Image 1 (cartoon, rainbow, N blue to C red):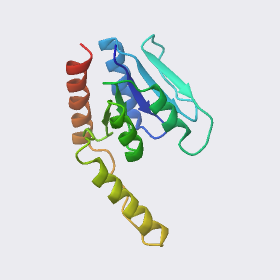
Image 2 (cartoon, rainbow, N blue to C red; image 1 turned 120 degrees about the horizontal axis):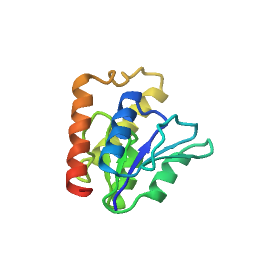
Image 3 (cartoon, rainbow, N blue to C red; image 1 turned 30 degrees about the vertical axis):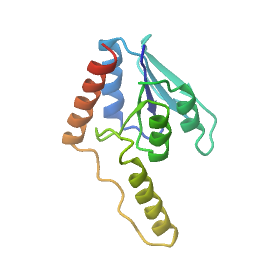
Length: 150
């Protein structure tokens, strides 16, 4: 049975709630992986894994737990690439799926922006999560559930 793994250190609360409701409704295991305690409702379908603090420790745990066709929720592009390479699906908090055809270009752009920030150039961060983003996330989650869980 497929599962959902969540890069939970920075997931917005509204998406955490959407995921918890989906876990209970669909009887799918949703595991939140973070380097801090994550407050979650009690359910046999909702799990939390707390890892030690450190660079990419949570990401590596998610990769280790990922199996083919699992869904990973993350905004972290290198993590998404690792998940795709293992045959999993990766969904952004804004509701778009990463894919093997575009992930390398996204990594290049991410690295370019990091270089700019490292040289002192201010780059714009992401916009706040909008109602449209939440709806797209819910729709994409439902699509994965329909195709890979039911």
